[in-house]
Image 1 (cartoon, rainbow, N blue to C red):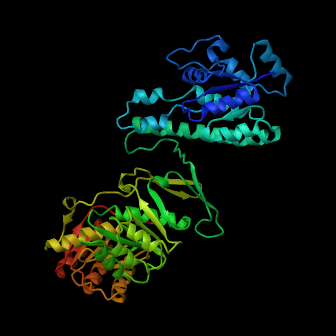
Image 2: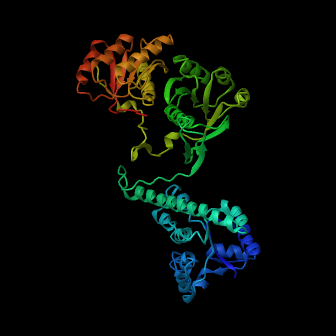
Image 3: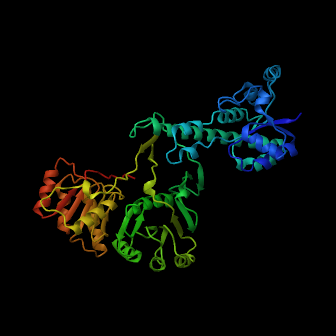
Length: 511
């Protein structure tokens, strides 16, 4: 007895050879609908319309066509249960042995600018997920195909019952992953339409496809994988495969460099900026960023916001680093680095400030979800709280340092001067300790802090941190403000002739 395949797809790539193999090699009868049926007939394949099989026409603009007991009974009937088979026979239900369905392109539809809600809703597939789920539930007897990439492996397995049985398990798992992702996309879209902008849905759905299995995680004893569309933002030009830590560092570097429109180079280690500078040329920016700390960049990340040219490539080539990120690389730069086969060169394809992906962190028993810290740095939003106004040069240092400090682990202190970091203190339990480390780093690098701006990711709880900065040579300060001792801190700044700016926004970065 001929087997039956139900075929109804939106994505018709590869369908014709697959359907021909079913009919010509394995003697399948094909049930189909709409455009899929027309395409197969045009290719000379015999097709039975689902409406002819069920005795019910497609109706309600195609909303109802496969939602029928003769379809789902043929999918769900267990072949090992006599009562299932008797019920099917008495109601004229044929067994359906293979289902090939892919879904309406909902995600592609809602990704279009200014898509209408009505269009989005009409692209919510109902019959497709229903058939896939029915077939996947009964995968012991039914082969279910939801992805054109699986056509070849299905055709190969149809002639080997043992192989087909094992393949059906994987295909069923894929179906439930696909339909879960599809429903998540719908849920997330409707939450964005129907909920208030700053509210969160009752259930937070995550759905990311496996991009790559990694060699290991943060440490060799941890397994790890990358999910999602990281490759849509970064293209690897050369070098060995990315590690878990590389990917984290690359993400942090891209977020840092997105702060700057001026020609800028950043150097990061363990996601912390250890040298950042803006200048007229990349080479100048590199030399100044590197001068902040010539030791910490060993094994780190270098990022820039202009094409990497020959001059900076020659300057960087002797530095051992893990990754270099740039919007493009000149032919000369690529030639210079071609001898360093392990060095990872990453082309950044888009501005990550456009990325509205939420910031997620796993915790025991769940995840934390928040907006990314992408608050614009706008001088007009800041308030000078001291008797002395910052000079224009000090304003440049304050704004530059404020862009950097938000990317440094808390407690974070950055000393900035002439559009360059001259001292960075990261991740200490005390803000004073972070400041001391930044000053020590500046001394080690033989950089002059006098005339610099001290930038703090959170308020100074006591005047001591500000006083220490003034004694080190800082003449201006930028901080969120908001301490109960703000008046004492302002008074300390006034006594020392410092200019101080309150931003009203804190930038903790815990990890």
